[in-house]
Image (tube, rainbow, N blue to C red):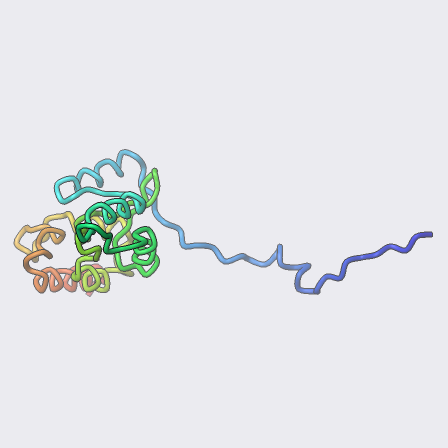
Length: 170
């Protein structure tokens, strides 16, 4: 009778299929009709682009006459997204980024974004955060934060702090 050879299996390996596997955080994707309304709100402040489109814009606009200033724009965009230095919104067609938050010729994120995202992340989800930037804000006399941050960043930061306080029920 031939000998049966069984593979050596580490005891824990037999149970890995039953252990809960880490999952990526769920991202809210709006239905198409709501997404179109959100996209329309960004239309007059640069619109929304995918990460690949943003990399192409950086590649096209960020040049020093003969040589690009950024050798790997897609890597740069990926680092911004992973580090949560930028606002992203999941669309039915993938992740989109509002253009108002970028200084394309310098291949940089607007310096105010770090401050504002620090105030509002964790209190507002991605969609609420996107809407916060394009909705007229009473703390800013009806100005939209995405536009106001270009000229009155301290006031926009104060508005973000006030809205965070209100959102937390303070």
